[in-house]
Amino acid sequence: MTFSRYTVSIALTIATLGVLGSALAHSGATGIVKERMDMFKRSQKNLKAIKSHIRGEDYGSIAKLADEIREWAVKMPEYFPEGSNIKPSEASPKIWEDFTGFKRAAMENETATKKLIAAAEAGDQTAVVEGFKAVASSCKSCHQSYKLD
Ligand code: HEC
Image (spheres, rainbow, N blue to C red):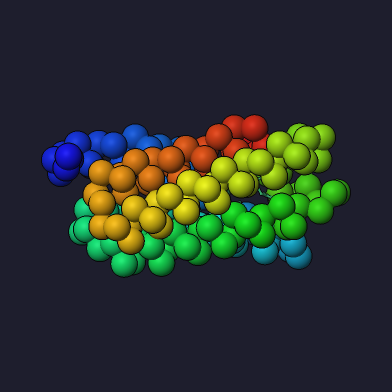
């Protein structure tokens, strides 16, 4: 099955509502807080780029960008040492109350990106759209539990 361009467009827009919203400038962040914010911003940029590559059916670029998101998902927990919710960080204290849950949420992000990469490598448009939606929803679901806004 292939989606019509219109269906793809709607699906992608819905998937990214909230996650691709404007990232507020967080001036003043330093150290590990700044490093992780920069990595999240890169993931957001990659996700946006993937969205346009889906429209262009550029699966090679999708796989590459998704792999960068995956790499960050793997490292993410290391960038949240206890006591690092220092202003202007938006990290919720819940991260350290339930670090196992936080790591699981990062792993779900990793799993979703792996599926997206596999779909892109297979050039399977339907699976790419599904994979993209799953990645975006894994971002959102971690934010809902572990990010202040
Ligand atoms: C396991 C949890 C988790 C996952 C998965 C996750 N995030 Fe986040 N994200 C956070 C937390 C926590 C913060 C706040 C970090 C801080 O301010 O110290 C954050 C912050 C951000 C920010 C704001 C950065 C800034 O400059 O303040 C953006 C943008 C963002 N995430 C995008 C994404 C995208 C896109 C994805 C999916 C590809 C994603 N995140 C996946 C937990 C997650």
